[in-house]
Amino acid sequence: MKASLSRSGPRGARGFTLIELLVVIAIIGVLIALLLPAVQAAREAARRSQCVNNLKQLGLAIHNYEQTNQCFPLSCNAGCIGSSCNPPNNVGGAWGSWSPHALLLPYLEQNALYQAANFSFITQGTQDFSTYGNVLFNSTVVRTRIQSFLCPSSPLPQGNFATTWGVPTPGNSYFGSVGSSWGFSGTWTNAPNGIFRYRGNPVAVRDVTDGTSNTVAFGEWRIGDGDNSKFSIQDIVNVGSGTNLGGGNADTPNANMPVGAAALPAYVLTCKNTWAVSGTAPGGSQAIQRSTIGDLWAPGYFSHTLGNLLLPPNPPTPNCLSCGGCGDNDGPGIFSLSSYHPGGANICMADGSVRFLKNSTALQTVWALGSRAGGETISSDSY
Image (cartoon, rainbow, N blue to C red; front, side, top):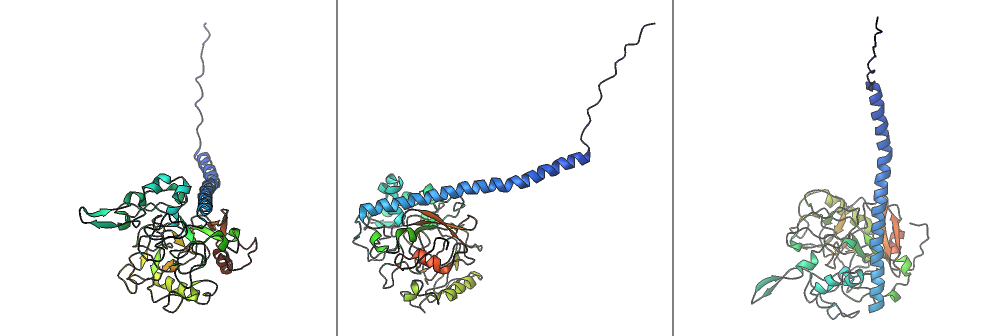
């Protein structure tokens, strides 16, 4: 009798039970929850580091400019560029003046763009030439996007504006500080107390008696989203020329802190309350709010390339403008530090160093950092 040669078949592989599968999924979920914030934090740290590097480039650029011209760059009118510290048209008032950023282009490895600009004309617009009709000028230069002017943490502007001929604006995350000042005109009796100004006499290192390491030259802000139909914290609210720090007088001693400290809270409250409603601004037909801050790097005005240090970073109130009938934001107001970095915003001092200013910084410290010759004492742990 032959032996039966039988072989048992392979046993079937055992699968996961439902409970085991749920446990594995739960473990994966916990790991993602633990790792995702760390990944996001690492990415933000890299973006913040690049933002710091951008500001360091600006700090180095103004020093190279100052060594060449014996002054810091001035926002001034068409035709005054290239005249060092004595621009011939520094007293006139023409919309479309060139910004400090534009004057710094050769010191930021943007000499080709600087050479392409026609500084005999304003930053953007048309000129009526009898032979050719209306001709655009500086359109290519003004709408060129410069990466070193953009914080990587900030979304790029999406709006199409008439100032850039219907194409997205290039954006600008960094403003030149006029100081702890509500106004920006250097021709005022109560001229700004910071590093930069529009018209008048430019500031030199010798004027910064508080020390270049104690005075802010550049700060960052959130670029506007270009959507005026919704409320965004970086909006610019126009409260009209009759609402200001001097009871209707723009050129007032209250324009500079700390002299205007008593008048500032009421002004901020008016801006906040105006932001909460819709309509048109007093004295003009423009929308009360505009989300165009940081849209351009070429014009030398508030909201484009000039800002101030009146409030700590990321205030719970919008930016504010006092200019009835203004078609642009070329009037006095509040254009504050803000950022997408947690807890504060980066600032570049006049010596080129970059520091982080916390949201919790006291008003008096913010004002002291903004002014170039206030005589304030700032402790190392005050911000």
